[in-house]
Length: 463
Image 1: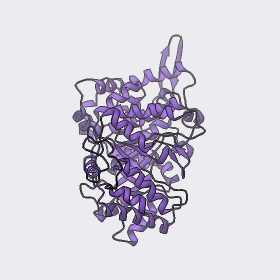
Image 2: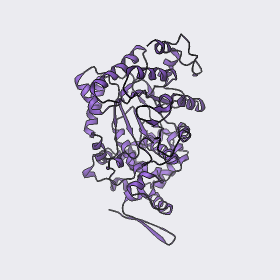
Image 3: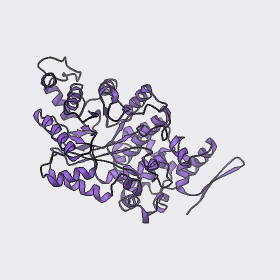
């Protein structure tokens, strides 16, 4: 294994592997410190960044950060690498890649051409050399468009996941939250419930509830119950007409971390085939929905010595293979042990969004924090606004921004309205047309007065 060194003044800094360079070059965060792999000083961090800047991109193909022989995520990344797409970049160092990405000559179409030639480790590496504004600039260039019943990721659009969680899975409580969200023009990315119970009967009940509401009002969106992929497979095996639009699963960047979630890549492949066989999409067949988050592999003691941001980027390598409709990083959900404060959460959210889109993944962000983190809603407002500038595909819409089942703080229905207003953004086009037909929004895309002529309002009042 290659060793690396960098001299700063009279001091020589040595790094035992490429994995060590990546870890030491990472911006400060509590998770890497907890793992014992972070830089111990700002000077060491600078030395590692200087090494990384001069590292050829080819090195990431020659020196896997997790051994090929024992990790199926590594095998997926390397076996699926597109050498033709990589060819224009094959002579670059990581520093060269940064300069190229930021150059005015490189646009979204060019980035799409090379996306399959970039490995997650390359994306993570270049992000470590970037300021926040660099991450925003390049992510805004990237465009990833996906389709199921509507179109996600078009320029000038911002979608939301309507998240109507309830601590007892009460159907009336869930329906009230869904209708409330729809009346605030939320829900075009997905209406997605995290169930309090993973029992198959509860999941099936919630799936039917979502499908009946969507069908009754011909809502051009998709629904999802965010239970384990094995439960969704079992439901599809039992019912050839199962009302499953999107298959959900949390994923991570190492084989061992995914095993801690109870999944393998072959299981995800089986779920992809089963969901596509249902043929429920009207515009496309992007049927997978993945969630990720920096620190998940470390919390499972399965990070393989990787820094948490590189491990997160590898999760996007997994996601990319399955052509998902949606991927989102639940950026501050795991807690301050991994992202200590608002500054670290903001940086991580921008890194994740950048890496995902650079790799060709349709990225959203759950802009969130737990109540014991050194962060508040103003930090989330800052990240929300920065991600709007960066072209985030979707955010969460949670009643009051306070998830009463998962007990964390996210973004509200009103936050999506704010970002659409200040950035001149609109919902997915098919959903926007439906909102106008239902008199939820007017011709100028502003919320219409809530009158008796609004069918959804009538449903909420009588249902």
